[in-house]
Amino acid sequence: MLFFLTEKYKYYHFLVPTMAAKTGVVASVIGTICDFYKRPKFILWPKADSCSDVQAFIDAMCEEYDVPYIEVMVKSKQWVEWFVGQKACACAFWSELEKKEDSVRYIAFDGETCRISGRDRNTPIRIDHRWQVAEKIHTIIHEFIHHYFSHHHNMDTKDHCRKFRKMEKKINAKYGIYFIYVYTKFGKHFHNFWGWPYGYSKPTAKDRGWLV
Ligand SMILES: [Zn+2]
Image (tube, rainbow, N blue to C red; front, side):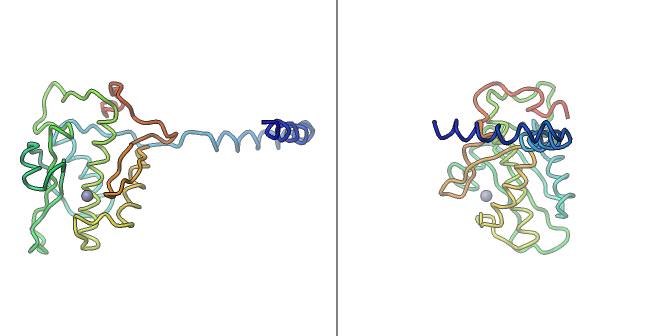
């Protein structure tokens, strides 16, 4: 503590006369500090209440990353677990034989876990906690990246390699979503840029993408 105070004193002692002499330098120093602490600009989370909302989100990413169309489906929890395995809540899949132009690719979500309704409704699907929205956006991006790597690099959907994780971190960061990789190479412990967890509070209209 003593060391810290001494250092701080030295800092001000040195800086104050310089500031007084050159106001331009003051402005530039303040500007640099402000830039450093300024919140980065994030893309607002898109509306992802129903299958068609998620389809629009995926379609936009397909265009941005130059990959073909992939169809979004919302299935039951039982169906996804039966199709993929225990604890899975979404999957991207396509025929192994396909290399043809007309082949169809799919991403299926467990609507109950991911909080996505199969059809458009007047009353939006209920979401109790902010972390559920953050995790949903993360899951949608995750499945899209499987599609991307399969198309561009012929990579298997079980593979969460270094390149995959790098891209996943990068896209999530654009939406202000940060997380930690656990040993299974899945993202967990979602938090914002400052390290705050998304938490249990009710998501706002902005969180739900209703203002976009
Ligand atoms: Zn995966």
